[in-house]
Image (tube, rainbow, N blue to C red; front, side, top):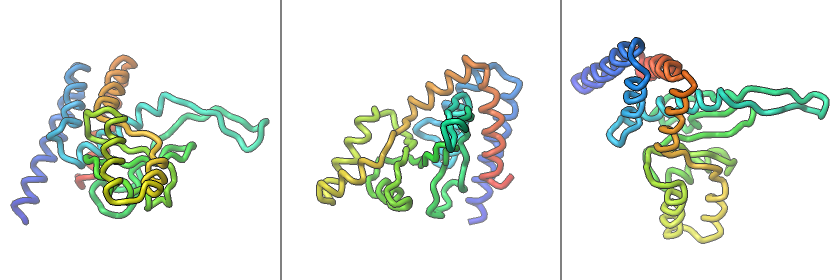
Length: 203
């Protein structure tokens, strides 16, 4: 166990050091590093941290209008909050978008059992999944639905599938990264990644 822990710690330190060195690098080098962290061979926890950082930046460029009454309506910037630790099995939801109250769950798999469990956690409240997959959103939904149909009655499957608002996939996150480059915000992604990665791995 100690050997495994030391190896994991060394790998985490290496990623942090590489990210720190890239702070003085070119935008395209930072972009490649970020996309590598989203790749098929990346660690699940790294994927969750990086997807949070990307979505956090993506939503920071968007606003909505909110107010209790018509006269109180104000323009508010969207903010994505991380609500737990990665891989904690704490039964929590990964991200929450304020003030819309949208829930997000990051995952590596298209496992209907996990999806339905996450949906149950929030009593079938609408939810968005962030998935490490290059399949189209419609393909992802089809796979989840077809697998679920082998276990549950059609009405139950429909009830659960209707709670899935959206599925963000790796290509969607990659587009957001490229937009960050265009908007000169790619260094913000790197800075946030270093902060949240260090927290997750207790540095």
